[in-house]
Image (cartoon, rainbow, N blue to C red; front, side, top):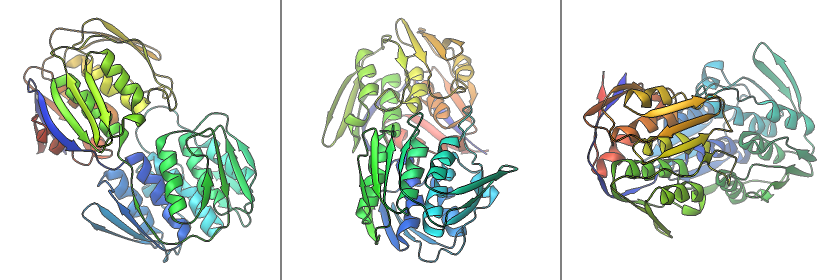
Length: 418
């Protein structure tokens, strides 16, 4: 077991590069199955979820080799179309392999995925869309038995803009005859990154970033070298860390256009935030002020993954801020831990009301999920004394080295093995 020891009261200063995007690289790793050859992924983050994806690829018969931040994947040796239940349980994004395996092999067997417990996140939209493309899917005892000898493109209208369903259908459509149009598609930057990777392999994909994505299937794909986009949620975390601790930081490579709702909230709170082609700079005042209601929504709305870290940054703000969580039903599990540190938060259903306090104090707190764990670290930076953040394996799923990055900015944070 590991934990972080965080001593609060030290303003942050300096610059740090932003890692490659977790939510981008995971579907890209599944997509490497489609070209049946070699992909060189540059800027690939070393994360627990990436390791889980690599283990799935190796289980399927593929090779994957690390050299610093470059991951080279060779999928020419694919020799099976099933994924063991133990591998599927490692992360929610494992479901994304379904579309790619069906497109490559015409059949697949896997179980329902695992991941952080944030409330119901069914994959019914994935299954419904794949069936519309011609897949025969039987569900039995938590397992999915899938056959798709001849996928055919068609128009698929999603009932809501699911990121995972959009990605899964994009991958499956690459192996379908004709044109597939995904209507009411998710618009997240990670969808655009997946499209750009597929294009680099020779696929004909367009429309990513809008609500309609078009894929012309059965095109021959080839080897490619691709650089993963910077992680906008990691960037949001470090911006909120600076807002919480005070000081001025620069995030190298971060793209403000991917974070406009987060930077707008931080500006309203009193921070000076500027973005340019090289990254984002944030200078925080001595104390933040409350902001207008924060309502999470699909992109380009406020990201649910940034809700907890912004909440942590506003614990010592002047005034009251209302949060409304509209994506996941159990995304306030970090609240009780923030209250342990002196935060004043009232939760009713999807609404959390944060009333700023003068001081936070160090406490022993426990990470309940990936982003909630990061929020505890953000709050600890502003607390008096030392906080012990336990169960940080959740944090390792999405941050390459949170302690290293914060320490490089002047934070007093130590990773301790227990």
